[in-house]
Length: 178
Image: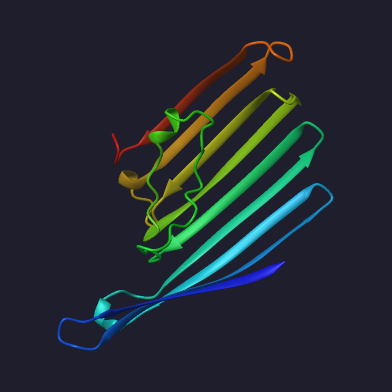
């Protein structure tokens, strides 16, 4: 499957005239034999009056599942792709707990590259184990912008109507957030 998108933002300039900020993207996705994949490339073109250089973005997602096992991988490469109207995928772990998911990495679409890998095993509908590793850096590899996270989570329900148990161990390093 293929699709594309186009976003044009026009705004008045203080001395008269109009500035434009244009985002466009092309995406391809498909699946076959337990595998699925998605790739999207984007480009930004802005008026010189905005003092913004053109930007580019790349997002890749691959997945495989067989029986009770699943493996996913995502990658991102964003450079000067910041917009008030669009937020590209962060490519970090989204926790299954509501409150614990609120302290995640804040992505920087202006200058960020990274990836995430996750494997899971679910022997039953309400039991399983998930291991995730994600990382992000800026293009220069500055330590200040380095983000790392490793998460192991487990879930199990006793019987069809029994109590549900969940546990999680998480390690992360994000110097900007402390």
